[in-house]
Length: 348
Image 1: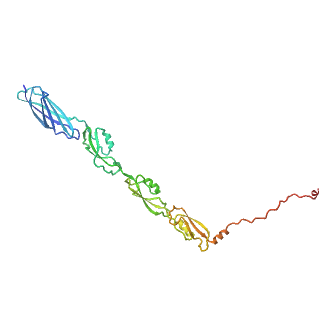
Image 2 (image 1 turned 90 degrees about the vertical axis):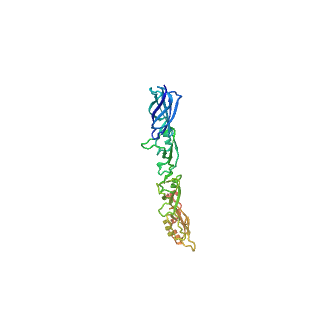
């Protein structure tokens, strides 16, 4: 004979690592006839007591379908029992015991992406997880940080693995590119060479120190700011310090010997050029013109032509010092034969 039935049991859930277990489940109880069902909501990890309203016969199977959802993960479980044979018009109890539910969603263990670049992170998980970039793009403090991931959400932690449903998004934040470059070594190099080393990396600034002193090569880098070998942001100005060509000293109206000394001391090569004997009223041995003119920048060692007039005495002395050709001897007479003619030969 049919009678009333009480179904008892308990639902326990086992979530994936790093996930929160559901706090409540939905129960669907089928009482023998599949068309006869009852639905309840029940807390997880708590005993449930269900009083069935439909008649149940001895030996009928009582089935309980359990469903739950938490953190986007679906859970399912099932339990069943047979109606007590002693069931009469009174109350019978079908004890289901513990029904354990687990996830039916395909889960993926979330790795740590920290220190990887974005392409490597996506390649690591393929389509199992959707790695998306978000958050602030930070400026790296060293080159090894450039374009790498510095944060992710959610993330696995040491000793606390995390699993997500297949295809779940994981948001990562990355450092920006490394825009710093090393300032090249340029001291002692010609300015044109240094400019080539800076091209495409830094802007070039010029600190011209003036004419090069004696012994100093012009247009040779003497200092670099910021310092060589330092890491600097791409595109900043790197200043080159160097001397330019020395200027030719002006020595017009100076005595020729003194002018030659001044030109030589300035690092140039004096080249005296005589304009001939000094005309009346013109001091001899005095520079009357020079080429190039005073103040002209020229490379060290360049010739400087010093034009001057000679003194007549010096001209005469120079002429007298020239060697003279020997005087020509007498012209040779007609050639005479070494033969003599005897008187007898002449008469015959």
